[in-house]
Length: 294
Ligand code: SAM
View (tube, rainbow, N blue to C red):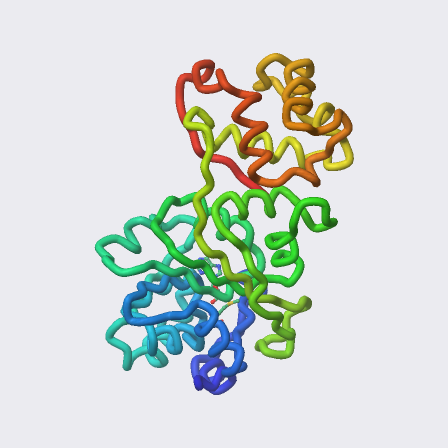
């Protein structure tokens, strides 16, 4: 196991809070993350933020190849020391939000996994970016704040159910793997963490439904979660047929007029969006998949 304090003092490194630098120091937790991802030689593992390589080294023990993207130039020296013995690891100095994920993972014939102790300040954008990128991942395993995991795994009708829960379920089956105490890091973060496992799924959906529109509906529906769908969606400019049409669709779906976003499953969002916006891309004339879920 890499000795974090020793490496930090050898390189005179002060960790940067704004980059979410809380390094894992518990060998048992690291092993559990690798086990959760069921890493083997057939896998290319993409890691966001290797830090000084504590998790990276254990991934490299078991994976075919590891590609680790680190934004902080100061960590490149320590990383070449701690990962120097591995021929199957490539460290890339870059910001994951500005990196072409397709390029990183190209030419790999085996399965693709993303395994990462994510920097806290960008957990949701990184996760959404991975999900939406379209890269052919099989499994994503992320350590993030406990609250974010609660939102990711929440089911309809529960208090944590949110736009993020629906978005995640559109792409994956989320599962809480285990919780991690704040004492397992240097420095100790202000919050507890948890590990979430996302297994790829593909849902059937109407051919005409474009993803941008689906996500617009999800976002608008949750933006005022206390409002009924009739009120939160009823006046949206992209809605075909206005409130009347919406009322009719809700009735066809067996839903009452005072239904709120928080009770709808992802399958129901897909159905609702498909019905609501049948003419959407005839109007805009293009498919644009860019969207953001916070
Ligand atoms: N993997 C290490 C571990 O588990 O001990 C470090 C995890 S630490 C929570 C997050 C790491 O992500 C830090 O090394 C930080 O410098 C890096 N990082 C932060 N923002 C990043 C970004 N936009 N792109 C790539 N790496 C980033």
